[in-house]
Length: 473
Ligand code: NG1
Image (cartoon, rainbow, N blue to C red):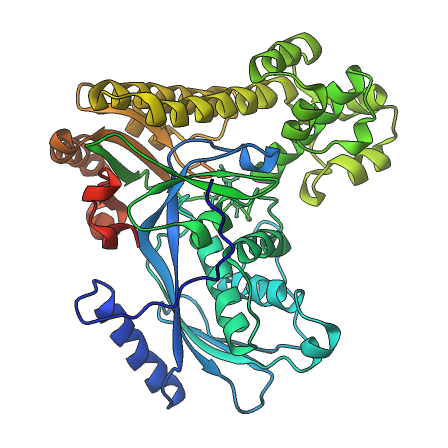
């Protein structure tokens, strides 16, 4: 188990780095905009999750890896007035923003995608909360130009990368020193201000990723281990061309709330004080049961038909107001029905698949059969997300159905309802598979031609000793 008590690294960038041109462009943008030189840069990667979907917020471990797309910030301390936060973005769609570090609020309207600066402000808020009142009063502002090339609303964690990059930028100018683990924890909490109750995977991999390696990340306490993928394992990440900003709808928080309700209903049925439980992993720990036993328990205790609020109230012996307060996210209190059995089944079975994925990587000597086994787990993960968790999208299902004979398995990655799929294939088959995707998927989509360059990614991951590190910076 790796202990990550060190601070995020300060890296030198040289002319040979792939990102050099991007840094130079951003510097030019900053200087044209503000008439001054940036004094430092921050870069935070996006990620693709290989397996372990919608279980981080239930306390279960996940297997993400960083990708080469990132948020890059050019920054300097603001001098006039000293407390101003001044933001601009190289993407003209994102408007300039200014506020005072001592007086701002994060405003998110329901049903609308949050303005980009709100993610930045989450990072600022996270850092301010680590400071004493006196230091907060003296906090200095920051002038930033932001450049992002992680596709937005694609399940590749562009929003968390921005929150984390903002936290790093503001911490630096205010001389706040934190470990990677502290950053990951505070940024996960800070992103709650956007309104979605994610589980911490994205912020953890943003700080704990290392070049050329996927990670097994577990929570409570936050820990990270390298995943030694089989030789030749190659991942292709493809965009379904359907976008969903999860802060725009209540779907994500509905799932979080359903998992919480499932936890509490099972806890009550087992004679535990249900008010003490919010996540399925803590319930499992309290019951001392295996994941298979938890699956049996779900099938015995929870019914398949959706639960009405009134039924849950009577099971937990509370009124509706108490239920809203104890168990439901704010934007879910008007939901009429909750599927508890399906969601809890997905979580326990997905948590088991993560265990098996990691064990296969550890134990299987023959890389060919290891890749096959990992692919099977990924396929099962997708079916579960589609049928039990209901967070797929027809485009994702079409991507998942392609590649018979060329791929080991494909699944949706990230929150779903659109966004990207991740495919495990071999080094030999990757090129043929990407050709097939172009022919059978992208050429059929009218928007594809316009978005070809942006929508399609090939990420090759080799055994880390043979990797090209810059691909996974
Ligand atoms: P996306 O939407 O892919 O960035 C979200 C959550 C994760 C996790 C995944 C589903 C946030 C910031 N991220 O990721 O914590 O729950 O969905 O596995 O809410």
